[in-house]
Image 1 (cartoon, rainbow over the protein chains, first blue to last red):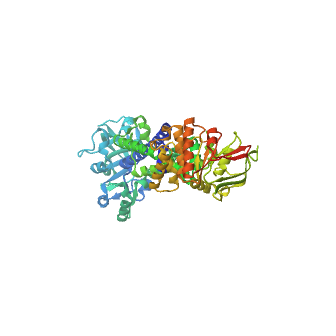
Image 2 (image 1 turned 45 degrees about the vertical axis):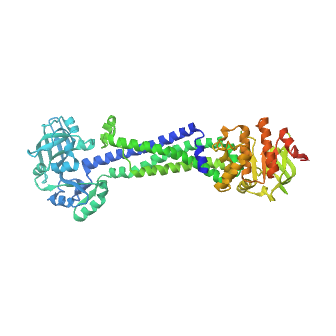
Image 3 (image 1 turned 90 degrees about the vertical axis):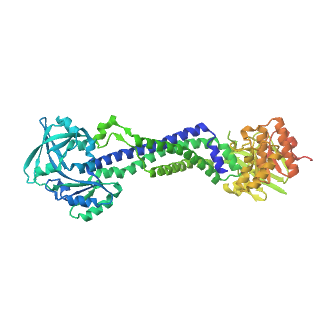
Length: 404
Length: 229
């Protein structure tokens, strides 16, 4: 009967109960949505970085990662690709030649990283072929083709079919230059990357460098990022003379984002739940003070303090749980809706792209967060019930009964 | 057999600031089966005495024995348990649980006593029938008149099979008809089932029906009259 009384008590003042329930629904929904949005932003950043730049795993000659100097290359990269294909969860891999140089046109010049790629393999790893906004991807026929980003193209007045000159040091340390024809213009949505990179065919770059069969980097994409640890261990064992790194090691900012997301989630939950605790305490305290005489009567006729405490406790928990369910449902539905259709942040796209994020954010949430929310709301209810229940059990029946 | 005994009970409110002496050495004995009214003007100490006898308040001095047990020495939790099993209360403002039906209100105290469902059902129906509410069992307090609510309160007070029932101004909020009806019921329960009733009242209709009238003046017993039954 205690459960029944507690349940009925929360409907005594429906307006008051609905107001606090509304606050809980809103709080739960807002928390879920904010967390999913944060997850969406972080995964947009991480995915963008992995897809455009880092991949899941990279392999280099050890000294290359220190200085990024052109002489730290490996020969016969095919055997590295063969090893990569043995990795469990392998999706695609490619090798690249990376050289720092200068990009010049009749309008100006700028420092740049020249990425010599194998077109078909690069498309499998970075989907570069899908990021073209003008022109075409590398063609089988034709030497010295290059892909330029929209940002550089705009700044240096480059169009499809424009001729540009790339200048760099060859493997003997001599300054060399090559004239390239722009065949396509790309936009990865990642401003720092687009501002600093140009793509050419590996074969063309290697020829200018003076060594045909070399590469500076192997990049590997896995089917599931969670396999990255095992993949690294395997490759490091198979390629002991090379430096094998995961995306977290290559880009500490990605690791920072990934590790801090759980902290952000916890902070969101704590802030919103704290606000709710005070809202619920206020409502329950009103409910207790309003029923002061009735509570005095219950204690007078023999309801002990444990039962009175339990009754107020149950009322608070019911209030929180009844509101939690629609809040959770609303959160679940909105996360799933926006996960499919996305949230267009094009109004802020310039700023987002500067940080390497795309303008569409797809909120996403792990199932575990719903459980965390349930636990958080239960703890909120428990905390919020303590003070009103304590007030109730400390009343003196003889004074309470006389209250008007 | 005496079920209530008070010896030199005094009660002083605000002893450290502005002391108010509500009871001054009250000696009282109530026997099983009495139908007693404690009367007196406002401020004479009626309610204070009833609260102390009922274990809702503690005396400043003296002691109170109920069924041979000194209740003035029990701690709060033991007093609650003692009240549950030994004393029935009827309050001036009915004080029913608004979210429960009449039957559930009567059952409630038996639930606290952990009685079986069958026993709770049987006794609550029997008591509500005894107070003339057998057709109102499923109604909530808000759906009952003041007189009907007070009859539910009487049934609730009897549900725990207490040694006695304390009623603080039970007719104060009732009209004449309801008062007469309630008094009839309580008198019948007293006569036929031997239930002991102790009222505090200044309602002449209650005083007229009481078989013993104790008059308090300024916190002391001024007279104690027993009527011929």
